[in-house]
Length: 325
Image (tube, rainbow, N blue to C red; front, side, top):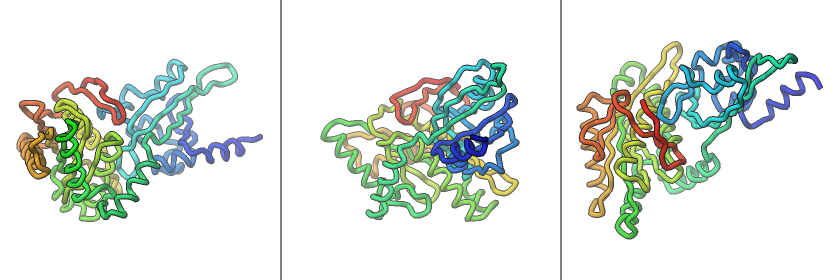
């Protein structure tokens, strides 16, 4: 069995697989890696993963390539590793992936590189079924592919009924893209549409499976988060803010970065969907007034700006994780 056989075997894998040498120069990139990342083998082979090509970040939006890279750590100490990270897709969105890293050794047992296997960490099948259901009910935003305003209004109404009947808490986060008009003016409306898709997908892929994300209108998005306290809602909002800030859309030789401002409000039993969204909208306005790219919440007396305060970080499918900025 020659190298071509093993290459064909790896190319048939659903997961992404790539090899690097000791300097983290990419030597091999399989079809699974192309599909999951959007980057072709021709675009990445010969480049260094330390160039931050995939821009791996953790759940708090911290870049791993600047000192916390599991691939680099395995090359140093020879220990296999596994980690849940957020990968940057070529189209700009953020996608949660599970990475598994192992060292590559030569005949003398010297470490000469490493192999990383990464797989989509979202529940794709369930998400696709939900998208199809929403499409049939005309609850899908045609541009971004996430829920539309009608979907969010219906979801909020249902959560309010559960709050009144069973006491199940929930909250809403209203997010608005900062300086979106400037994006349209500088790059055109087609790029503006791509930015909307990038932000929509980053938000939708990084909430918990039972939370709802929809496009409220224009450049505004609404997240309905179930079973949260005011503090947990603030944590989730700050996490989403950080991940959008770390997302990038490539337009030729130029990179387009955007930020979002957010308002987070916990539902009260006497709320209506309109009164709850009005409070979130007021908090969003506070974030805009406080310099943008920050979260204003009923859980805190003032806005929380990403790099200025320690925050707790909540993973998409877990109750809570703690990390410091």
